[in-house]
Length: 133
Image (cartoon, rainbow, N blue to C red; front, top):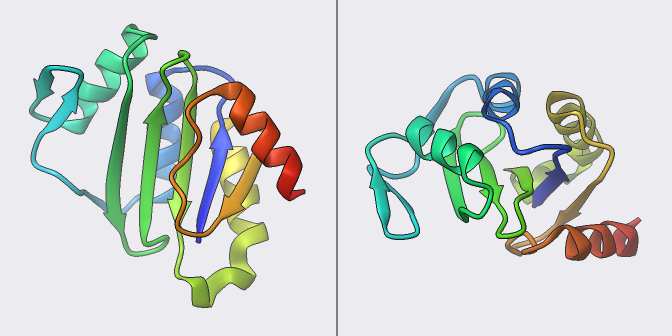
């Protein structure tokens, strides 16, 4: 199960607060990070680049103990979506994860799904969140 939240701004401090709060024990899921045709040696550098360049589009994933994965998605319309993946056997914890994510990233809008990538725009996110409520 994936749980996504729309952040109020595209900000590196917000991303780091989300990650430190939600997945303090995490390991990057890749050895290099591509943003367009640029390659970065660390997820932190890719995050900084995406926050400084609102047109940059990128998804970054981390493996964690709990939740199973944490991820950030820089959308092409300049917004930021964060998320976690939890084991479907833990679906009963979904409301608590939504609350934790919302607090960590100052979000009022979130939704859950199973095996679906996040949407590509704020408008789609709002529609999706409204359709699953």
